[in-house]
Image (tube, rainbow, N blue to C red; front, side, top):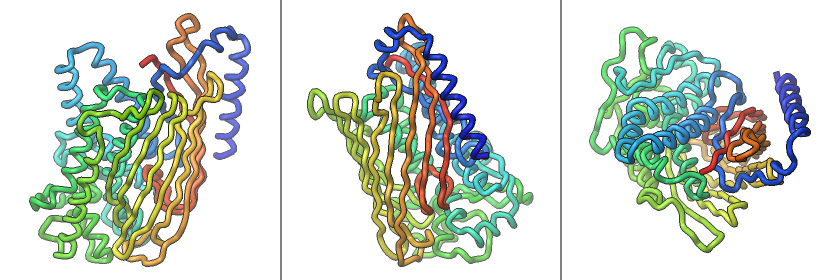
Length: 422
C-alpha cells in the first residue's frame, strides 16, 4: 500500500509539472497567495480507514468556512448568524464530535455507526459495538479505551485551536467563524461543568447491546475508568456511580476547563497588532487525554504577512505527576509564488505506558510537513487557484492530539486546497 501511494504522488506531481510548461509566464509571476484565503482538504490520510480525526477536522473546517462565507454573501448578518447557530447546534457540532469517537474505533479495525444528529435519542452517539468487544479493548489497550471517552472533546478542542490560528494570522474574518467558535467553546465547557450540577445524560442501558452508546457520558465514564479500570464492566456512568475521589477529580477538570476562555477571541478580538507588520495572539486551553489531562499555553506571531509562527507549551498531568511538552511550527511559508509549505515539530515527556498511575516518563516527539503547489484556474483575473497537497508525518510512540495512532507511526496525506480572495 505504501509503494502504491508513493507512486501515485510522483505521478500527480509530474502531471502538474507538465501542465505548467504551457502556461503564460507573466500570469505565474503575477500570481500571489498573500491576499487569498486557503481552504485545505485531506482526500486520503493514514491509516486509510474511513475518515481520521485530523481528516474530518480539517475538511469540516474548510467546508464550514466556505459555507459561512456563502451565507454572509446571501443574507443579512442576523439571518446568517441564526442559520449558522441552528445548523451548528443540530448537525455540525454533533457530527464532528461523534466522528472523532468513531475514528478511534476505526483505527483499531472495530466497526461502528455514527449517529450525528442532535434530535436522535442521545443527541448524537456512536453505536453498533458489542459489550465483549468494548470490554476486550478496555482490558487489552486501556489508553485507547480511555481515549474513546475523550476523543469527541479532543476534536472540539483542536477545531477551536485551528480557528484561533486563522484569526491570529488574519486568514479568516472573525465574523465568519464567530458563531462556530463561540458555540464550540460553550459545548466544551458544558461537558466539563455538568459535574457541578450533578447532571446525568444517560438513561438505562438498551436491551440490545448493539444499540448502546459506546461509552455514555464522556467525562463521567472516563474518570471512573481512570480510577477503576478493572471494575465490573458496564458502559453508562451516572454521577451517583462516582466515588468521592472521582468527584473531586471531576470538579478539578471543571475548574481547569475555564482556561479555554483565556483567549481574546472570546470577546471578539481576532488578534493584536504589535506593529505595522506584526500580528499576534496568545491563549490557553485544557482538555482530558488518555492518561489524565493537559493545559496549553499558545502563542501565534505573523511577520510581514509571510512568516507565521505558532508555538505552545503543554503540561500533561496524570494521577502521579506532571509531564512537560511543547512544539513550534511555521505555517504556509511561501517558496516562490506557487508553492507554500508548513512544518511542525512536537516534543513531549509522557507517562511511560500512557497510564494514569505511571510514575516514570518517556520522551518522544513528532515532525509534520505539508506542501501545497497551486495551479491558477483563472488566468485573466488570477483570483482563484487549486493546489495539490502532500503531507508527511513521523511520530514516536505517544499521544498527539488529532493523530489517532498512538504507536510509532509514519503517515502520508494527500489532499487539495482552494485559494480565493478574502
